[in-house]
Length: 101
Image (cartoon, rainbow, N blue to C red; front, top):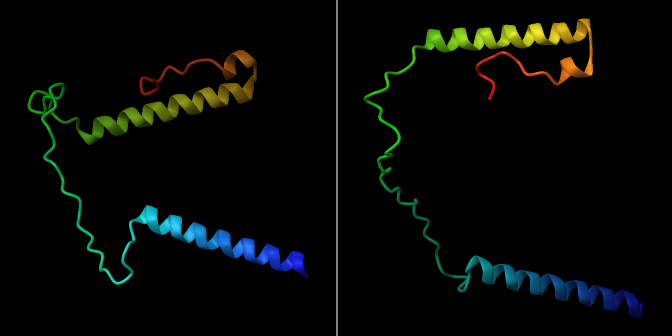
Protein backbone atom coordinates (compact mmCIF):
# COMPACT_ATOMS: atom_id res chain seq x y z
CA UNK A 1 0.00 0.00 0.00
CA UNK A 2 2.82 2.36 0.81
CA UNK A 3 4.45 1.63 -2.55
CA UNK A 4 1.18 2.43 -4.34
CA UNK A 5 0.76 5.73 -2.49
CA UNK A 6 4.36 6.73 -3.16
CA UNK A 7 3.91 5.98 -6.87
CA UNK A 8 0.67 7.96 -6.95
CA UNK A 9 2.24 10.97 -5.24
CA UNK A 10 5.25 10.92 -7.60
CA UNK A 11 2.95 10.67 -10.61
CA UNK A 12 0.87 13.63 -9.43
CA UNK A 13 4.04 15.58 -8.72
CA UNK A 14 5.21 14.86 -12.28
CA UNK A 15 1.90 16.05 -13.71
CA UNK A 16 2.04 19.27 -11.68
CA UNK A 17 5.65 19.98 -12.69
CA UNK A 18 4.83 19.28 -16.35
CA UNK A 19 1.82 21.62 -16.16
CA UNK A 20 3.89 24.40 -14.62
CA UNK A 21 6.62 24.01 -17.22
CA UNK A 22 4.07 23.95 -20.04
CA UNK A 23 2.40 27.09 -18.72
CA UNK A 24 5.77 28.82 -18.48
CA UNK A 25 6.68 27.80 -22.03
CA UNK A 26 3.30 28.88 -23.39
CA UNK A 27 3.56 32.23 -21.66
CA UNK A 28 0.46 31.82 -19.51
CA UNK A 29 1.09 33.98 -16.44
CA UNK A 30 -2.34 35.23 -15.48
CA UNK A 31 -5.25 32.79 -15.75
CA UNK A 32 -7.74 35.68 -16.01
CA UNK A 33 -5.87 37.46 -18.79
CA UNK A 34 -7.35 37.46 -22.25
CA UNK A 35 -5.20 36.41 -25.14
CA UNK A 36 -5.42 38.41 -28.35
CA UNK A 37 -4.31 36.66 -31.49
CA UNK A 38 -3.09 38.87 -34.28
CA UNK A 39 -2.60 37.77 -37.83
CA UNK A 40 1.08 37.81 -38.75
CA UNK A 41 2.04 40.84 -40.76
CA UNK A 42 3.07 39.93 -44.27
CA UNK A 43 6.04 41.72 -45.65
CA UNK A 44 6.01 42.70 -49.28
CA UNK A 45 7.72 40.08 -51.41
CA UNK A 46 11.12 41.39 -52.46
CA UNK A 47 11.86 41.61 -56.15
CA UNK A 48 13.94 38.65 -57.18
CA UNK A 49 16.86 39.55 -59.36
CA UNK A 50 16.96 36.17 -61.11
CA UNK A 51 13.33 36.22 -62.26
CA UNK A 52 12.21 38.51 -65.02
CA UNK A 53 8.53 37.85 -65.53
CA UNK A 54 8.23 40.27 -68.44
CA UNK A 55 10.96 38.54 -70.48
CA UNK A 56 9.62 34.98 -70.22
CA UNK A 57 6.13 34.47 -71.65
CA UNK A 58 3.96 31.89 -69.87
CA UNK A 59 4.05 28.36 -71.29
CA UNK A 60 0.73 27.33 -72.86
CA UNK A 61 -1.09 24.55 -71.03
CA UNK A 62 -1.19 22.44 -74.20
CA UNK A 63 2.60 22.30 -74.32
CA UNK A 64 2.80 21.25 -70.68
CA UNK A 65 0.17 18.54 -71.21
CA UNK A 66 2.02 17.20 -74.25
CA UNK A 67 5.27 17.03 -72.28
CA UNK A 68 3.55 15.16 -69.45
CA UNK A 69 1.92 12.72 -71.89
CA UNK A 70 5.27 12.07 -73.56
CA UNK A 71 6.86 11.49 -70.15
CA UNK A 72 4.12 9.02 -69.17
CA UNK A 73 4.50 7.13 -72.47
CA UNK A 74 8.27 6.85 -71.99
CA UNK A 75 7.85 5.62 -68.41
CA UNK A 76 5.23 3.06 -69.48
CA UNK A 77 7.51 1.84 -72.27
CA UNK A 78 10.38 1.48 -69.79
CA UNK A 79 8.15 -0.46 -67.39
CA UNK A 80 6.93 -2.77 -70.16
CA UNK A 81 10.50 -3.36 -71.31
CA UNK A 82 11.49 -4.27 -67.76
CA UNK A 83 8.54 -6.65 -67.40
CA UNK A 84 9.40 -8.25 -70.75
CA UNK A 85 13.07 -8.84 -69.88
CA UNK A 86 13.85 -7.98 -66.26
CA UNK A 87 17.53 -7.32 -65.65
CA UNK A 88 19.40 -5.40 -63.00
CA UNK A 89 20.80 -3.08 -65.68
CA UNK A 90 17.37 -2.23 -67.13
CA UNK A 91 16.02 -1.59 -63.64
CA UNK A 92 18.65 1.06 -62.89
CA UNK A 93 18.90 2.63 -66.34
CA UNK A 94 18.04 6.28 -66.85
CA UNK A 95 14.88 7.29 -68.66
CA UNK A 96 14.97 9.38 -71.82
CA UNK A 97 12.31 11.78 -70.56
CA UNK A 98 13.35 15.44 -70.35
CA UNK A 99 11.17 15.88 -67.24
CA UNK A 100 13.44 13.71 -65.09
CA UNK A 101 16.33 15.48 -63.36
